Image 1 (tube, rainbow, N blue to C red):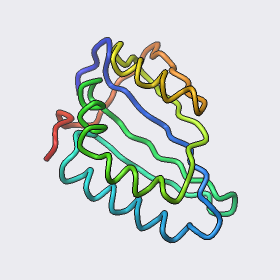
Image 2 (image 1 turned 135 degrees about the horizontal axis):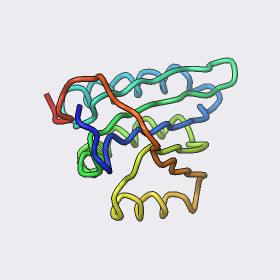
Image 3 (image 1 turned 60 degrees about the vertical axis):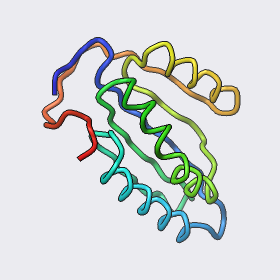
Image 4 (image 1 turned 90 degrees about the vertical axis):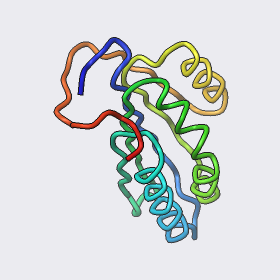
Length: 133
């Protein structure tokens, strides 16, 4: 995957799962990942659990800012289904989203901690173009 000044962009989302919602959260997350794999532009999506502490972590790798906007546009129903069972504790963004995505993140940031970490150096060995398959 080619590295450019604004790509790739990695999101790390830390979620607190509501008491009694773990199983429903897991099912909603699995559905969202299936939808994403079939239709959305992410290069990679992974969910990880810390059930003991009622936390979950998702990582989403995007080719660029346009793929983030596409994800937000086409996946809102699935995002909402997951959010019924959790709250976002923080969002860490690694890379350089463009001004439009950065402005959207700033508006989200009024309600939750968001940090943008600029890339210093790196490479990606993953194949793919970031488009839906």
